[in-house]
Length: 466
Image (cartoon, rainbow, N blue to C red; front, side, top):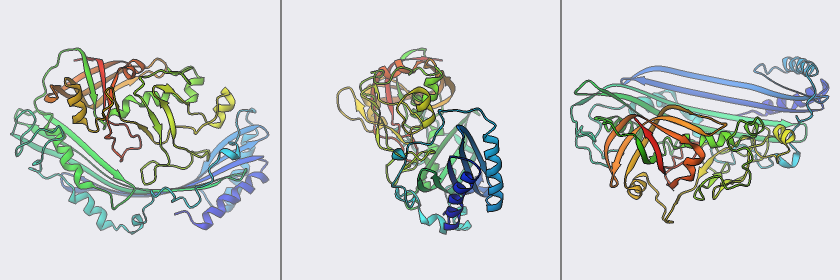
């Protein structure tokens, strides 16, 4: 945690900035630690422990702006550092668009830093022996696959979706980590705010080999801000099922198919939209959503919320890096773009109304054309009937200026609501706006261990090539 002495030193930096000639200033102290135990083929491979503490200093001197950081937190050193930073700032050209956010926009209720209930005091009590046990106890063992597959098809013994039974586990890498993060921020207009969070994470990647020498990889992970709700034991079996179900891929004809995209990768079809909503990209004419504010651009079934004040959930925040208060609100409502992400600088530069500088915890709400909510991936596959399920996007790109995209994918062909066979080395291409105008359904299965809550999605008439 950030100590009283560290808080007092942070506040002193405001006085140092004023003494150095800054009319306004913002000081942000961050403090974090991380512990990691990784395994390779069932044995401890690497152990890491690190700590970090630094100050970020923003100065406004005679209409000029400068941003600086240091990890030397001795009071004498800081006084010299801030004086030199102010001298450097005065060498820059004036910029009337740079300013602190208006005081009525800054956060008032982040007093203790633990209001969001995402800091677990149990973090302070974990021993090295417990971390080692978390890593080793969740290693995948040969023959571990005994449950139904992630695709909903029963797996007998060591069987796979294709019916192959003669495969073996040839490598496994696991990683357990826990971390804490604290932020204390003050400015010369009265802002004082605190944020604290913890995270417990476990992930594994493994490779299997079938009887023909073909190799398939699978991975899974989980995370939680609470040790009590942390479920690392679920990771290994899920990763193994993912690898085994890829055995026996077949070719699939190029053409238009219904696309169902798994919640594990669906955020990659939302990220281009979030980038295009950034005011910097809009101002630079590098956004396919320029001039879209207040307009219906997407399908009416698209409802994207930002829910930064979701207590107990990873990624929740009461304020952004400027200290501006977050709020739960609509970003895209019934297909209509409701806001851009506009910090103080871009608001002054463009004339747009200021908001938080970025989306914090986006969530796409569930929807389907007939009004019935399909909560799981299998329910959406049943609803669509025929198409291709995408479970991994292996590469590709999206053009922020035009919205055109091309992604390499792997997944499964499904017919009549049943998964038929794995497919690999295919591309999906198109335009993000057109894609989202063809939305069929959005599920209710977003993984809470992600900061972006995007569920399984379905779109019609998507171009696949292979």
